[in-house]
Image 1 (cartoon, each protein chain N blue to C red):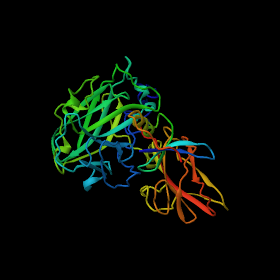
Image 2: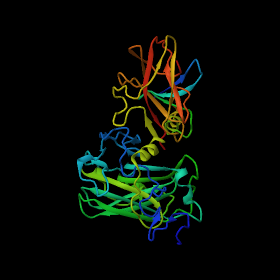
Image 3: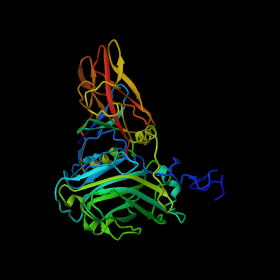
Image 4: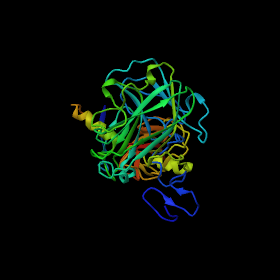
Length: 365
Length: 50
């Protein structure tokens, strides 16, 4: 490609041998937000035991699912091993028992890319682009691990496998996937563009052959390693990148503030970073002053959210959810007028002095 | 379990998820609202607004 020209995937520069978008530059090369596992607004590095049949967000943008609860936990930098070169954080899974996975059971971590950020891939058309999924993985187990890509309707699946040959060693993985020319994939919408599953143990009824698209619900290749099958087993992952093309290029690093803002489209909180929702903390609380009567106050979101979010109001002074704090006591909150840019909250309990609250807002996929 | 919410001043309505007192807007793109709709379709009924 001549220097100074542009094609769909990369921009030539005047520097011989370099291409913005093909190195470590920030041009939406990586479709994964928080692939370096740096942001953990909800848990601030705390461990989360995954409950029964509830999609549970752990590190920002990453959720876990378990058909049966309490079989594994997820924590940023679990086990405190040294991250791979170039990274400071990872998502760590720890198995909490030796569980035999039933035929229709699933234990996994997942990531969902918004349709606005995948529409250019043209999946579901004859012009579907090839992508490459890359990441680094570290596990106490060895063997053939698995996962799958899926569409919003969960009727198109691409099981993929990767091998971990050495236990407790960071292993770079690269998987190239021909874009799906069939099926229905959401275009430029705020729905699920592409879903990605990393299996921790998935039953035989939900497993199939690797390396091709299918209309069957194949969440992993048949016979993949079951992390939850070994008590104390670990599975750590970081540097996750999904990019256009058939070659895994260098990980696209982003500035911390940029990564945080990208995450906040899907989840944000009024609490300071490092303070878990429900903590007793007035730092950053929204407060209104008044003489008497109803007190309500608008809270503006830091960035516009993906959809109208779910709001939880907290009393800053006690941590109680569903409350504001007014006149020295908790009062039932009155969250209302929620939009993608903000909402109003307060109490009609006739406070005579002040009212304040903290909040979380969630618009995950 | 869920409860409907109605603000008597602004007439704003949402669904309260009782497990964490979350206010869920009536937005079909909201995954919590999608879960609520599945719960209703399964034959469940939310508590009335008070």
